[in-house]
Image 1: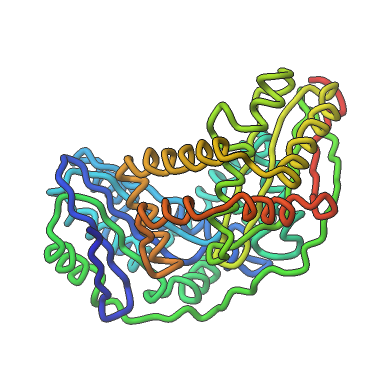
Image 2 (image 1 turned 45 degrees about the vertical axis):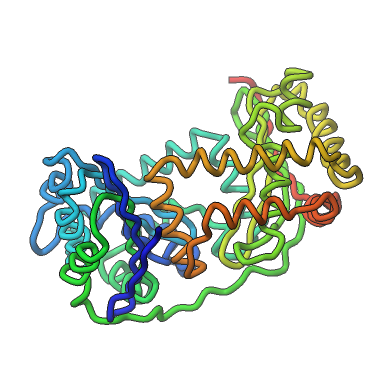
Length: 410
């Protein structure tokens, strides 16, 4: 059972008490790279690094060692719509987690020497990203789909923007985007809910209520584009796809099922069977559907020898055409629904995954979607629903394609 509470300053709490020796707790903030101004590209991610680098009470080492000294972990990530600080630890150390996270959230000092050091570290991170074409091409494809919109920007930013960041820019971004009304503390662990509330009140309750000053602009005006970029790779890398449904769209569950049929993680996905298993053209071929609060993207990624590029395109187009024109049979439909439900339950078996999921759901939907409810929605999807979604998102006239083509073998 998930229990919820709201502090007087607007911070929401959600907790599930379980037995077991490990607890997971996170702070979700509704602020990510899409909230950056043009000149702030990469700033949300930069701040996520810097909050561990010193507060008015602790130096960087003491922040990191606070949980590690008792065998726990503390970490963070930045996405396009969230910043999350989270930890895993034995349940008797909940108080330590609340203490250190409240400290870095409210009392970080952003020392100048740490700013300079972290810029170098993130430059290395950007260069590592550039050395990985299978990651970079997905970000570059987002730039095509969300052309000119913050959702299309790379979370890491650029070296030029990174060099311009200073303490006033950091504090301005935090004041404008780190709103208490847009924060969720999510937890799965062996702690009573009453004690969970008391700890949250003690460490987070005194911070003044803060509303978000900036409002997000929804993306519109998608235009398909075909682009080829020369790169010094062994393989050709390719992404093809389209704008897709948001988190609140009525067709989100249907599109998740369609995506799983097409190129989900199972070895029997249509793309894997048609391209890898039957012809051996690819080591990796997959599809990905990412829903955002007010938009989304669906894409197919593969890497292959340049000699097989066009043949792989033909096979993918054939599979998309089948999905757009042919109803799934009853046996295929049942298998597809069972696969997606099974994968959902397996993913939720990880308590860390569960904690992250409920935090994001409360942050964006202000509710938790029980697995049984999601399974009911999956069960309600019909063959006609799949055809309708396939014809909308895989309309050939709306498909964008980005290819990294080797200009020479290295």
